[in-house]
Length: 188
Image (cartoon, helix red, strand yellow):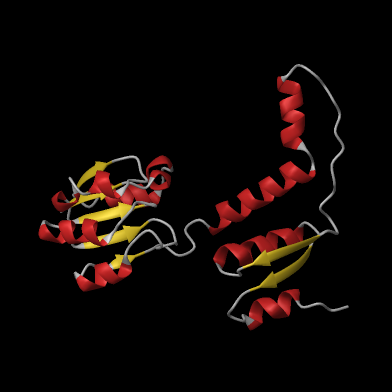
């Protein structure tokens, strides 16, 4: 079994996932993604399986892959928007993803950005880099309201963290999750 790994987050984060993959006895090649269709077309037929990130798996790439050895595509992450799922189905290539693989890190990143901008950390950093010490006052987030559109794994994780920091949480999702509504419902 020959496997192509292009997801940089899989490659750059040591852990059990890497140990498990490398202990299977597969022949593994790595490339730094995301790869475009033009980069995948010359090589995809050489692989039985792919662990990808945001690579461009068009119908042409999938067709070329199954003309060779391609049997499986796995997305290391959640979003499958860069994989032509209709083409994968048409050519009999199963596609999987890894729900919740990054919900904590993404929600933490959102909070880091929120704190960076509310506390003017980015502006203060730029000021110090220019040799000055201009004190900039920021805003507290406690007591502020955050609106979260999309309460999937990341949205729910962000709601939990924002609430723990004393923020009022408003959320919207097309699907109503009664469990999350009960937690954050206004008790005014």
